[in-house]
Image (tube, rainbow, N blue to C red; front, side, top):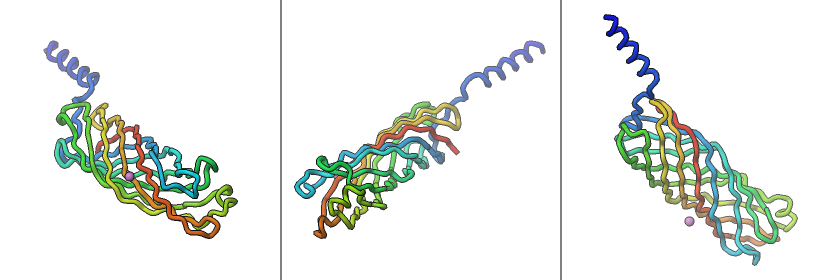
Length: 214
Ligand code: NI
């Protein structure tokens, strides 16, 4: 009797002390990740007024992903974020304008290993829609006679690789990298003359965060 009680207490202590068997990503799971998302454009453009290509700066925002597991290995994921803000400029002039963008992206994903694995590396492919807004020339741009700036929305393919590491039943850590094909047309007037510049943003997006399974 005493021994049984002792064994029970020991089992209970072990159950509390040992990490629970992490069941990661089963069919029917829904999970959300939140973290830092950094957009690094690999940009380039048509020649702008004989002064070279447009450049665009990096930006980091809050990124959110929402994932549904259709099977233990196949997931569907939506990427959302707070708006990214980029400075756009030319080598000789520096920054001429700022623009904000939101790049919602829908991915089909394959998660390697099985639902008992704590680490779930994955790859994904999908579609990105990027909407640009609040495009404005700064004082330097306005002083150079630049007006009427607009940046066209973009549809393109996206790819990703990532890793989820399950901490316990509910929480995970995540690191992932995305590549998005984002091409746009920048329209503006220079001294009243219409300019249409094809520009590629084609960013790498680096995500680090934590995830919670519902
Ligand atoms: Ni492209």
